[in-house]
Length: 281
Length: 311
Image (cartoon, rainbow over all chains, first blue to last red; front, side):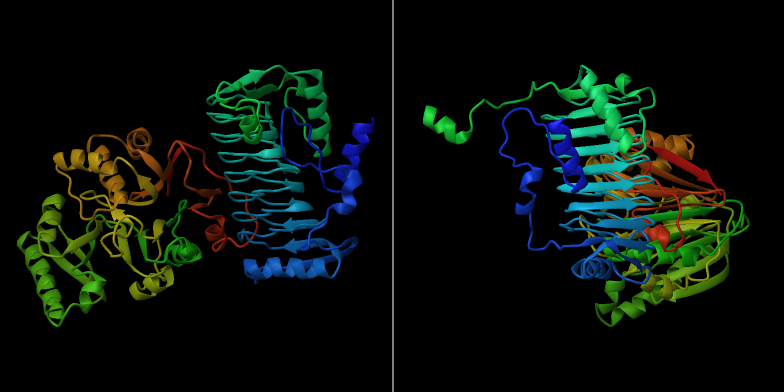
């Protein structure tokens, strides 16, 4: 229960804890250390302060500057109308924020974020949420390729179909796809979880180091060193809880999803860090 | 990088000159070196429309003789058309070096094309009953204004905005490519072909000609070759997925169809909007939004996917 409350507290703050196996040098968020988490580019905002902006006639740079200006004034809820599939909107936000895009985003939307809760009513183009550190992004329609590339934390949800190379190089967090994904999803995945409720394209999990991929539909083919793992009750419970947050369900039940993990046959690591190795040698 | 776009109206004509200009202008950041349009008007089975150039834009800066040479080359084109029995009925001059002819001709089209292109520096950009292919240096707005494309009415079109990476910045290397010697077939491409030279030599041995060193031209010639060997458009494109090596997304248009193909890695983008009235494709959704500013549902075609639509 203590772990659950920590997770809930993290989620409330737009942050996420990660259960990791093995050795890592990565520092993860602990709720009790929240006061130490501050960035010089982060703003103290109030969710009850709300602003709506129509960006049809603004450039992408002007849109991002406008969002930044509103955050600096303490606005914690911002509604962006008519984003018009412009590129690189909602990027580099390093604080809590409720950001709603009423429409679609182009390429590189919401990248490099750390903390905001973002909802997109339309579609997103390639490379949405690249390098996302924490927070939540929910896309109501489809997404392009390299969705969630190299994310480290947070929840990234697309309720529709997603292109190829979903979660390439992901290092943490959770990616949820309501529909299908294209080829090479989970390519070189290192940590975190990917949940695909529909079908997955060929070479799923190719060269994945670690992490877990759950698939509800058919898998066109597994990549090198990706193998089927054993679904446990813990997996099913986690999936049900996680999907319920976003109003989603596994088509044939969470317990019947296919679990894909790394076969770890390609691992060329030993158990020592380079500095430790020097000491031994 | 390059950007490609295409659209096809179902069962009607539309303002495709204006629509394609808007889409390609929205893709300007993907490559401002040159822009090209392949637009399809109402087919006229009794006439051939030929777009050709007699010099490169950059040639105009190469001395006083060039203006005389341009006139001489044009006179030679006229003479050779007459010699082959073509009856010239209409002539437009969009720039000093680019022309549009409408003529009657019942003979061997390949022989005509070869004979015209035998004239030094003359290149046929397109030949057909419906296709009008225009390409020049600069962005879409500039090229469209230069050639008066804003008022063009038609059923479908494809276009390209180019960032030159592996060949020169000139009209010869600009897209679209006409699939010589086939009436009304044009191709635009975003990507790189890694088996270009080997495939080119095979096609040259089969009698096909190349006017540039641009790998994208290979796709046009490849598709033309497959059609010549009996494939329909969809079959030719599907075969190309396995036989062309590299990363690519390309569009092909014929007198009544528009097709798209994506390589097995899906490494080059394509966004698709499909409704009962129109199909629109572009490298980026922002191009589609220049035609449809309201909210629409779009999606990415998947790896190895081929789609063909009829007007």
